[in-house]
Amino acid sequence: MIAFNNDMKSFCHLFLPIFLLNVLLFAEQRRVYFLQTTDIHSVLVEEEQEPSYGSFLRLGTLIREQRNRLGAERCLLIDCGDTIQGTLIAALSGGEVGTAALRALDYDVWVPGNHEFDFGLERFLELAEPMRPILLCGNLRAYDSPPFQAWRIEERNGVRIALIGMTASYMRYWLGEGFGAACMVEYAKTSLKRIFPDLLAVKPDMIVLAIHQAWEGREDPRQVNEVADIVEQFPEIDLVLGGHTHRSLPGHRIGPRSWYVQAGFAAKQLGLIEALVDIENHRVLEINSQLLELPPHYEEDPDMRRKLQPWLEMLDEARSKSIAPAPASDILSKGRPGINCQASELFCMAIAEASKADIVLHGVLSKKNFPAKVAISEQDIFDFVPYENNIITAYLNQEELKEVILEQWNNRSSYTYSGVYGIKLKISESEQSVEFKDPEIGQKLDQRSLKLALNSFTAAGSGRYPKLRAILLQKSSKRQDSGISSRDAVRDYLQKHPGLKVKAQAWMQISK
Image (cartoon, rainbow, N blue to C red):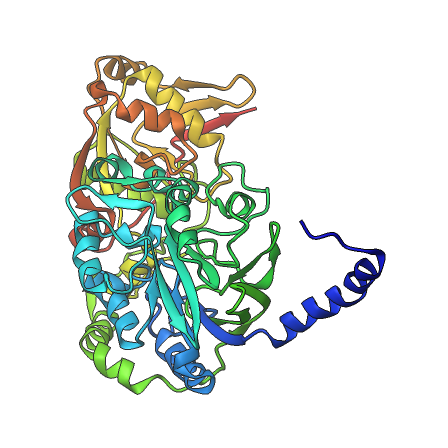
């Protein structure tokens, strides 16, 4: 043991802080850059119905400019999901145009979002196969497919960066039981707990989590987004790149020491993050970030356009070609479904005819109207039905249907709310009860002779309808996926009924 006299102690107190400061000052420091996109939703070109959207083709030019300016050897380009679905061109290509765009821009990392599975798990796996070199997703496993890589080490400018990918863990409430039977999605926190010992053992200089979830503070009662908990449990994470909520967050500190960034949705922003890293002591010294807005009238990336040209030509044709006659009178999306909404009435009429259901639950999916005397294009149909939902059928008795209808009504302020069609009823808000107005209908329901139809998102519970989900999970409900998409049902109905007039009926009467 070494004994220190008073002079030695004084020397240490005086010069040790200076020595440590010099170690930090002269330690080898390197800068690395991250370019982030998220929630692109295959917005390749300008969307007439959504003028606030950007354009991935034009954003591609900004991406290439920034990567050239900063140096590709110092940059990582990362997308945090919801890339392949959301526009007509995505639907026409079955999602392929989204992954093709990522390859055209040479992305380094892709983390799938929940909408990557809207075309079905099998289709996602087809699209994901050529993306495996850049795909990171540690909390999803398809049972009949090899697991995806959860994390990997990338080196940029001499900095060893541990990159982790996680998707939305709430998907079981959005995509239905067929999805849950074919794959497993666990909480990101659970996956991180499993992989972190191996990750820390390789002593990376920096740890980055790219996740299709968002930082919502503590204002997330359904726990859809785990980021706030993750940074508390894993303070070693230096940078979190988030998504899913379509919010723009240029960067701020969250948790004990993590930095959070979330670029805006629909290809209108690029996240730019700069990190100063001490590679001798394996620590991040400083992080700065900003969101770069897509400049107006920016030129499209020519190489990207060339590689996507077949789908762009397909889009032009679908936008210009009429596929259904104009309705005889306007079909408007305003009003309350089940009471005075023409758009939801059209949905229900089309779904009832396609599925031969007696009762339909449905709401509106967009603000799209069908004006009279204007022929309908495939773009119009997509804008009216922008999601890849199938029609689900089931059989419910009177008491079960009462529970389902009340649960919907109590969530009427949500965009997921569905009104009822095909059965007249009265809801008492004060007593929380439902009374069917026609006694014959009540008798039929007791005998389970009426067939209910609804879309697959609603049938999965959408995280808001646990009673509906529980009832449909019972074997007695005889739940079945019809295999018919809601969009196909609406298109077929419009084609079969030229000169259509839709009058919104008051299927539901409300008493206080």
